[in-house]
Length: 459
Ligand code: FES
Ligand SMILES: [Fe+2]
Image 1 (spheres, helix red, strand yellow):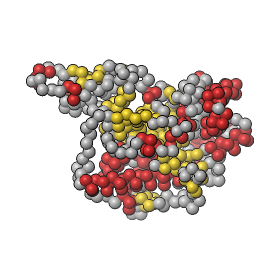
Image 2 (tube, protein in one colour; image 1 turned 180 degrees about the vertical axis):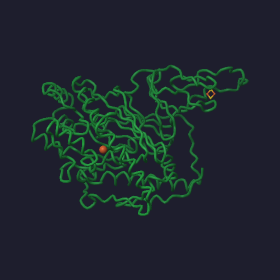
Image 3 (cartoon, helix red, strand yellow; image 1 turned 180 degrees about the horizontal axis):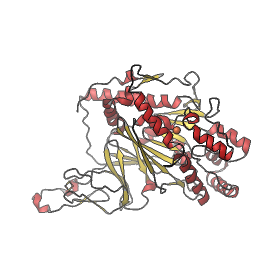
Image 4 (cartoon, protein in one colour; image 1 turned 120 degrees about the horizontal axis):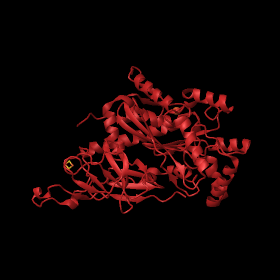
């Protein structure tokens, strides 16, 4: 399908964004192509498929993917597309299989992708080259601390370059485990909303909205426990941070340090506590194991951060105890999947507390998640009325500052993260538009062997 040339540069300014980015189907198609079908995209976590033969159905943009651990132990991302006539070969969301069998004409594939069997094979006159007809692998697969990323483009920047400074935040999320490993075996919850996918990624790192969108939650918390949450106030010392590359975060660390100094306790994360609340004896034991593994200084850093609250551009976020994955379905349809995680080798009580805290706010009957979904629907409806199409991105623009490590910092309620996301979006979209103009077509080779890279730890 040919589409009109889009001037992405004109749609996003430092201080505003044009609302057609949420409503225009051609912009949506261009995003899928440029961001999801060319760049690095989070697919799943190794902890979802711990055993040989384990698989989970995933998607990269419009591409159905089987994330599978083969009998050889290697994790692969295989296109869920029969090499005969294109049917998906696996329909079950997760399971364990040695073989995937296409229901249409019953070709079978091994869990490493190889074509295992062709029904009535003599009908091909001996010309069928089985070795060339395995399930097509995603051209590039990369892994960082169990997080599996895929790219449908055989060329492009490395995963390490794509992740940049965000690996430090992934480390903080994972290093809460005394074994340095998270487990992703506690199920997942899915929801859909009638709105654009970017509404969710912007909102995930929006420290301005909680006091208002989630007022009921905070009121209930205060009534039941007496706790008054002030981290999202306009004068909070909590921060927002743009790590570069579209990776952005709510940075609670400065706030937590003050909280710890005042209360001599572990930070209580209000939106799905990363370390939960547990009896103080267990907390002391846990703290001791973290110090033993990481040393005093790093342990203090890990415990003070209590995890992270970070978007890994474009489609994954780590917050509280969860991995959140955003799937664009249509310009006004999005699916969000939340995977609560547990910490390997942590006390059972701690892991239980993590899951309960997650459910309070994010579970299907939780206090927070439905609020946001409803607001995305309202935004999607509101932005149709585009006589004045510009949306404001200026909050905190006058006071953002560059930190010593090169990241951009603002106050907790500032729109530093939103500006960071949009800057990256604009960069990727304008580059892709220029490249497709140069080549005259968007044709990309999808042949060639898949390459898997492992990104070294950031520390
Ligand atoms: S489409 Fe899969 S066997 Fe024919
Ligand atoms: Fe929210």
